[in-house]
Length: 230
Image (cartoon, rainbow, N blue to C red):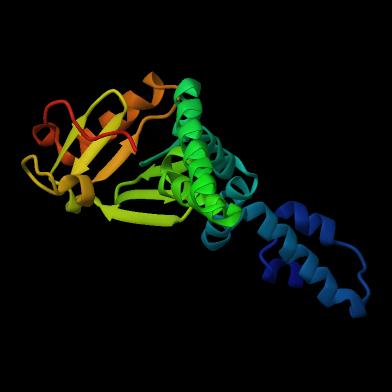
């Protein structure tokens, strides 16, 4: 009977009071009461704070399991993620006859320099200068369209332009020309931005045109562009 009073004060259920009857050693009274309280807490279930903590833990588990990360990586491989469109272009691989012609002209120029000056180093340097001036043709260029603006990465660095810096654009079979002028101007070839379509053509063309139109508006689109392909 002596052990039933502590059980009643602890607020145990009738089943626990029956289980608590018996002769418990006085030294184990504190441990016995702690066990009963633990059973009661488990029956009541988790508190509001613990529930919120469990929710945060579950959220971290979802993120940590790679679900979100794998989705973002998959979008990046496809060249598009929510609010962002990326692709790469290497013009020299789009037309091999044109690539052969351009290469022959450059090598021929280097050969003429060798004949005229008799200096191999000067001939190689002239070829390197011509290739460098056509870097956007020979080397890969990466384009990235985001809600903030445009980013273009080439072999010699990167440039970023906000959408607020463009007032009009034109589309042709090779790409999109973005201009800081509302009307056509010869300065747009130097101050504008040229976005080339990828080699697969139709796939990126529609996506790029749709993205640019969504940012600048349909009224900003002009007639067929005349900007040359770099």
